[in-house]
Length: 319
Image 1 (spheres, one colour):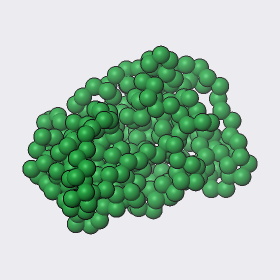
Image 2 (spheres, helix red, strand yellow; image 1 turned 90 degrees about the horizontal axis):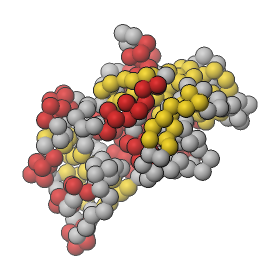
Image 3 (cartoon, helix red, strand yellow; image 1 turned 180 degrees about the horizontal axis):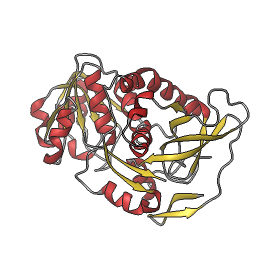
Image 4 (cartoon, helix red, strand yellow; image 1 turned 45 degrees about the horizontal axis):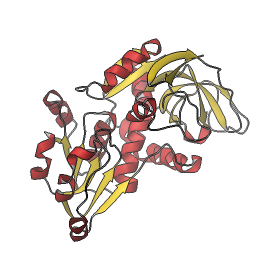
């Protein structure tokens, strides 16, 4: 099968063996697979797959079940599913531990084309799982609280904005490209330039998707007892921290990733996504903004587009 692999920091589409499902696994023929910041970090050698995970790129995908391993009970051949995986999503076929798989919402069947349906499904799982886990499970965002989302024009950012608005929070979103602020604002946020977020505060929760450039203003913008949730450091990972201000504010600094977690922990994230977010999808309260789709054979071009500034939403490969 064809798959996206990394070699010496370069993106390649190579022929690799088609995997076979083991106990509790399903084999999915991939119809769409999203690109994420973690893929860039892996390409650069900064985020290697966990032990036992596929070295093929891709942390989210959607498609049709074509084979099931012994012990599978929920899904059968022909079912349409999507999932967050530890690797292997950007390929023609992907192995998925059955507890991680989710059925596609019926509302997506109304999309104008099959490619549109699959682009939404392929770009959904990782960003909404990351955003929901970070905002609610980890940071405990509550109705009526004020949240600032840095880097809100990307996949996780647009997901976080929509989830915050749906939960009744007051959402401020920093967007570097002025051309994208109206679209982010249309999702329900107050979209502002990054340098304006301190004056627009204070906030109970800050979701950090950018990294170092927002420090030390993040701590100053936090309300007493607030939380800073760090899930992205693409613009830099090392910052000075005023410990005295941290103490005075009784602030909590939190950090999280999904990929290294155990199967059981990742399955809990999938169940929370099904329970709390898929209902919002079905009601039309959250959606997957797709910036652009690429054929799997054009994966190198897709990665170049992904790292270029100015896009809004997801970049998705269609095998």
